[in-house]
Length: 184
Image (cartoon, rainbow, N blue to C red; front, side, top):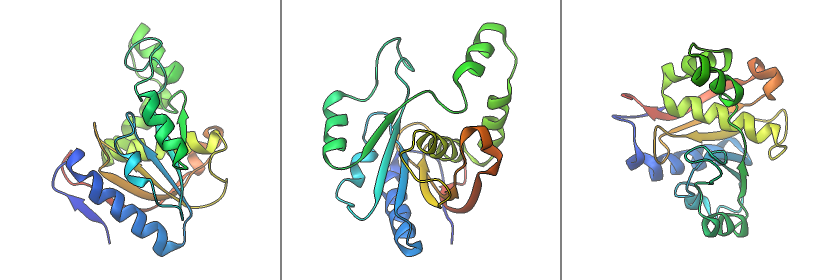
C-alpha cells in the first residue's frame, strides 16, 4: 500500500527510509539507492548490513565550480559504514542542461525529467539516481531495487523499480510507489 505524505519535505525523511527498508526486506531486495547531497539522509541507513546501499550525491561543481557539497568527513563515515558513495554527472542534466542554459529551450533529457516530475521531484530523483548507480556498476543489472529521492532536502519518495542503463533508459520499470508526497 502506498503512503502519501500531505506535503513534500525533509520532515518525512526518517519515515520514508523506514518504509523503504521495510519494503525492501519484505520483497527480499538487497539493493537500495538513495539521493543524498550532504549525507544527512544516507547516514540514516548506516547499520543496515543486510542491504547494499549506494548514496548518489550531486556532481562536483553543481552548487559552486570545483566544489563537492558532501563534506569529506561525511563521505568517509558513509564509506567506512559500508555505503558506496557515487558522485557523477546527473543522468537527466549534463550536456542538455548546458545547452538550455546557453541557448534556452528544452532538450530531450530535461523533457523526460519534467515528465517524471508530474509524480513529484522525488520520483524523478529516485529514477535518476537508480540509473546513475547502475551505469556506475554499483548495483547489479536486471534486478529490482528500492530507490529514494527527495524534493529539496531529505527524502520523501521511495520506489521499487528495475533500472536500465542510460542508453536503454525506457526499459526502466517503476514497479511500486512505496511513498511520495501528495502535494509538491
